[in-house]
Image 1 (cartoon, rainbow, N blue to C red):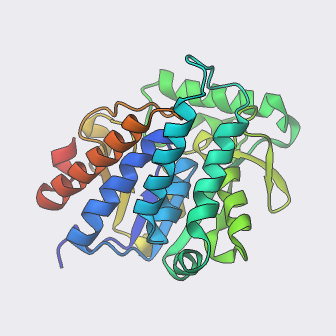
Image 2 (image 1 turned 60 degrees about the vertical axis):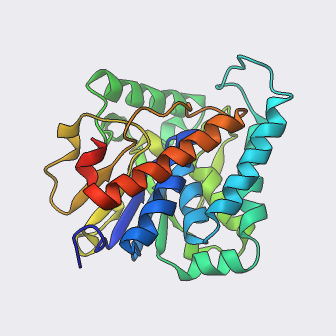
Image 3 (image 1 turned 120 degrees about the vertical axis):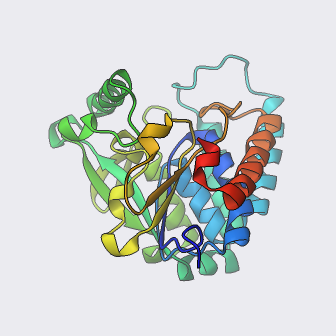
Length: 284
């Protein structure tokens, strides 16, 4: 067994629409390398991708998103502010999971790897618009200090992790609520609660929640959705980071361009093949 196909864990980073790249990457690399992790951590849109991946429904999900983006492109106003409430986008996001995971796919997902979905809990005194603003502040501080792969400042501001497990969801609707909670960014997505506490997008705290993987679950494969300098992705024992081999044309907020959806997915397919042949360094 080679190092590449012995991963015990996987992490699906957030990234909005850039996560279509992850779907293509896994579709290509997993069969080539026999990827079958026992544990998976995922956050925000990466959690949605992980659900489709481990339910065995990548192609069905891509077909849904392609059709939904094609339909929306006819009606979405150009230049729409992505930070405004977006009930249509949220409806597409929920229905992509609800329509694809019903029945056997949901059972396959629950019988698959231990899928842990990461959320952020704001400080007790800031569970309003102030809490989201604080999260953005922490995110901005990280970007101003070199934008590390794993964020730091939100934790210093009082945000704490909350974790839900797909296997504990009794219904598809409950699982969809969990994924949406991991992606919650008011006012775009209304406030969500999980396990009795108010939560927001887990990416505020860490957009690639490697911390959910224990020492026994290494080596770990981490699927990023944007590019970082190679020196930030090397030197951590038992951790392999993969990233798009070039900047994705799609933005994290894109919801109305079916061509960019397919292009991002197909770049993931090519990058997955590149990784399976030449390793992660070929993507740096």
